[in-house]
Length: 386
Ligand code: GLA
Image 1: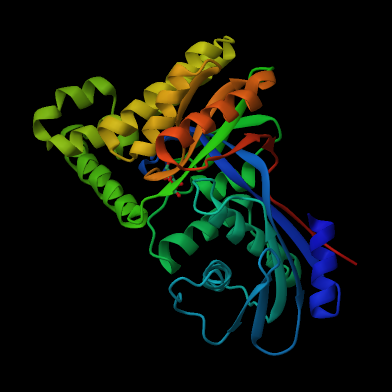
Image 2 (image 1 turned 90 degrees about the vertical axis):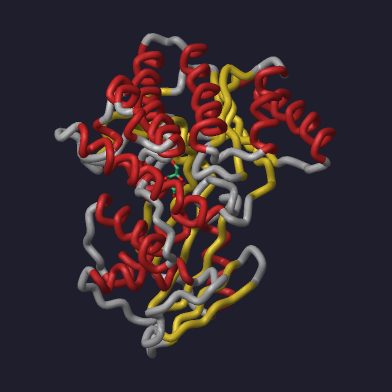
C-alpha cells in the first residue's frame, strides 16, 4: 500500500513525501469495556492498515488527500483549536493539538492517506488514522515520545478533541500489536503484560453486521458513566478498591443491594470480562481451544444481557455461529451497538464458514454482510524517506 501511496502522493503534490507511516486496525478478542475501568484486555492488531505520507511545506495551510475517494481537506494551523463536525481531518488536527499540548511545534505539511480498515465497524479505523498521522508527523518534526505516550496522545484526540470518552485500547493495540499474537494489556499499568498465541490451525473471522446505531457515541459515554457510578459505590464499600478492576465477583454479588439494578449489571459485565480475560490466557496455555471459544460466547451473552451494547443484528450473527458448524466461539468486538462480530474458526474452514453465515444473515435481514479472515499483524511503524 505504501508504494502506491508514494506514487499517488508524488503525482498529486509534485514532489515525493518525506515520510510514510502505517497503523493497523485492531480486534478486541476479550475484555469488553474494561479498558477505562483500568482492567485487562486481550486484543490484536490486524493486517488491515491506514497509511499516511507527508512532506513539510512553507506557510501555515495543510492539505490532506484521501486517495480512496479523492476527497481533500485543507486547514490553517492557526485555526485548529476546535473540531469541525463531520470533518475527517479532525483526527489529524486533534493529533496536532495533542502534540502541541506536549510542547512540540508542528509546521505546515501536505499529506495523503489510504486505508483498508473498514470505517465505523469496530476495528478502530479512527485510532489507525490518528496513529498513522502522528507517526508521520514524528518523522517530519522529530517528535520523541514513547509508544505509551503516543497511545495517550491518540486517546486525547478522541477524549478532548472529539469529546468521546473512550479508553486506551484502540491506540494501544494499534501501536503494540505483534504479528501472529494476541496481546494481554493491563490498563492500570498501561502496559502489555505478555503475548499469547492463537492456537495453530485457528483463525479469527470478522463478520460485519453492516449496521451501526447512530447513538453509538452517546451510548458509549452513558455506559462509562454507569460503570463509574457503580465503581464509586463499590469503592465506598471496599476501601482497597479503586475501580471495577479491583472488585471480585463475590464482592460484587455481596454488594448487590447497594447498587441500582442497572449499575449492578454493568459492573457484572466488566468484572466478568476481566475474569474471562484471565481464564482465556489459562485455557490458551493448556491448548483448550474449545474452552477459549466458549468464553467468547459467554462474553457476548453478557454484552447482550448485562451491558446492553448488542443489537438484534449482532445477536443474530452470534446465533448463527452457534447453529452453523465451524465456530468455537463468537462475540461482538469493540464498543458494540452494531459493527462487527468475531468468530473463532478453524483456518481451513474459515472462508466456507464465513460465507455460510453471511448467506443466512442476508436471508433474515436482507443485508449483505462483509467478512474478513484476519491476519494478526504488527503494530504501527513509520520511516523517513530520502
Ligand atoms: C471502543 C473504545 C475502547 C474500548 C472498546 C470497548 O473501541 O474506543 O476504548 O472501550 O470500545 O472495549
